[in-house]
Amino acid sequence: MAIYIKGKGNISPQQTWGDSPLLETPVLANGNRFACVEPDYTQFMDVRQLRRMSRILKMGVASGSMALKDAGITVPDGIITGTSYGCLEDTGIFLSKMISNVEHALNPTPFIQSTHNTIGSQIALLLQCQGYNQTYTQRAFSFENALLDALMELQETPAQYFLVGAADEITDTSHAIQQRFGIFTDEHHAGAINGEGVAYFVLSGEKSSQDKVSIHSLATFYNADETALNNGVHQFLADANLKAADIDLLLMGTQGDASEEAVLQSTAGSLFPSSAKGHFKHLSGEYPTATAFAVWLAARMIETQTVPESVSIGKANRPLQRVLIFNSYFGKYHSLILLEAC
Amino acid sequence: MEQLMADLKKQIIEALNLKHLKPEDIGDDQPLFVEGLGLDSIDALELIVLLQQHYNIKLANPQDGPQIFKSVKTIAEYIRANQPS
Image (cartoon, rainbow over all chains, first blue to last red; front, top):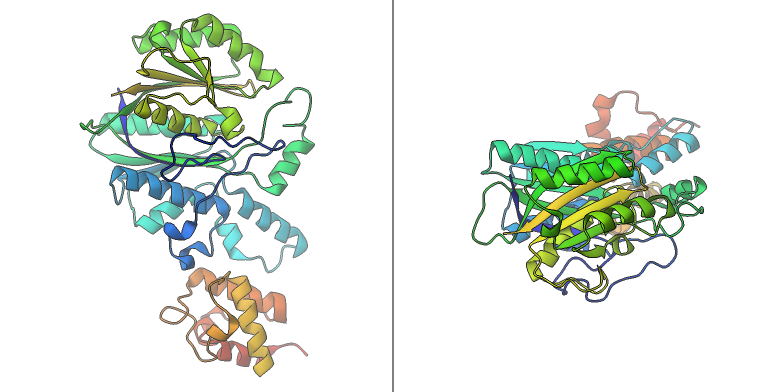
């Protein structure tokens, strides 16, 4: 069963909001940290609402608003969010105050807003949306699980509109801790850039004449070796009644990372010899919910029937009917998400 | 009292992140909640913490909150009456 993308909003290290053409001027990371290009949030909410929000909440509310506006929807039937890190900035403030104030006189705001489900709740509060609201937090499968939930919900009741997305942020503290662990710095992770981003989509099970892109299916593979991954990809294609040659573009989530590159490249090369290939993590950076950026990118590429030079490895030589996102998060979490033109 | 109220206004703006306001925008008797500055229940908790952090005053009875936090002036009066010497 397919679900249809009715609207999308994306705040990422690239200029992905507003009217500019798709990746017209790609931003390249300077160093091993890639921060989002953020809009003026007063376009999306009142300054009195903004004052209490951390950066990830502002990004979540803004990208959710963009998606709803794009879809022409005021209040969705439900909100589903995937986030691995949750609201790190508020978590960091709360924990730091615990230490500095010796567990006394702690400010309530960072505590209240430190939980993972604050992003989806904040959007619901502002929209007065009392429908289904769920947050998934399973590391690098958080967005995939949010999407799976949407697929299942919309399969049961197609005539609904769900706001589905993912959000993860970098803070100075999280970046320092990750570097201390050797992530983004040591020889096994050389080439990976720490990234962040928030992307929301309005999805429905009902097709309309304006729809251009659908999400067809998805699969996740935890800790799979090359054989298991190969078998998994074969099964995924068989379940979708497709052959590898039906995939017009394979959008790969590798980041020049020695620990993951080999398996994914080898699987992609051997299983999809005739498909054009592209990369996205040099544009988004590496973070657990980077596949939400990839879904936005794949949808935009299908809509516009263009593969930006900054994405492709060699020119795509046929129309983009199907784009398969093949992601790897440090070689441990692999996922496939198939998008199709309507 | 004047100095205390001026300090309080700055502290309230900082604690509640009211960046769109300057201290002189807040009247001494202006209501802080609902129709005044539009503060809400989470702000009330922040004000309780502010009293504790800056003036070492712990609100003995939370039921007194609405009366104490009515305006900058009522907070200043409460501080004067309850600040440890």
